Image (cartoon, rainbow over all chains, first blue to last red; front, side):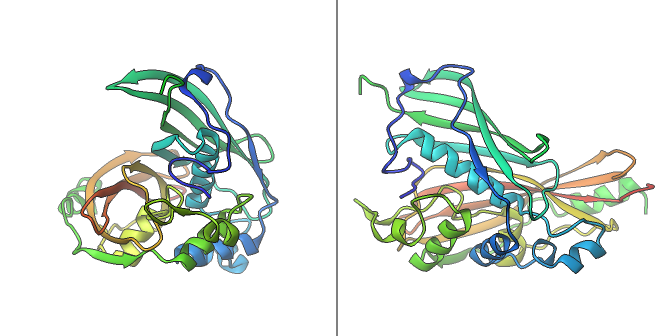
Length: 153
Length: 160
């Protein structure tokens, strides 16, 4: 199960386990199929043909149907909640869709810890998160803020 | 139309807010979302095997509003500022999360035009109008679930 508080079956991450510069576990998705985009379109009821109709996309100057930015954001959120464990909390996520990814692409989801702090009794960790295409180009970038439990409780 | 006039007309829409839009969080919708994101261990088995202590299975963080622009424009019906620019693209979204969303929850959303700004892009994009859409979500207990902000970029296109 995935929750905003972390995957129930994942190991628990504690604040003391985290250090600035630490890399998050990497996720790889792909090659992204047209079927995957159709599934996402149906799941969120976004039926813009640019995401699943090749002729429609190409008529607009694109090489093919483009992968939804919000799908990439959802997978980044998944990566984060899996990392933080069931007692961790995802508080904020921001994503900028900088470049288009086209169906058939293989995407790599990455993150890195940029700051740790204790504020108002909360153990907070800030991360840089991003998505790379198969050529290593960053197509989506963003940031996240999570709260973790401390080992002292 | 001059760029300043385009911005002025668009800025007149700032603050415009939709009526509330309510919907129930259904197990089937959650299952489709989990399947679409393709995470291992999720999907049907994830939904059925993992009710939370306080109610139904808990949804992933962006489930309640995965796309602020689509939610506001297509689902809730908020009218976006019009522009003479031919091209439009989703610039990204930000989620602030306060309460988990569970199957069985009844969520109420409102959307509004939060801001409009302009930028001069590269030769390939030309003049750009950036519209920030804000979607606010509460659950049936009146608790704030989340705030999602999306940026719509309208732009002139190449040669501008």
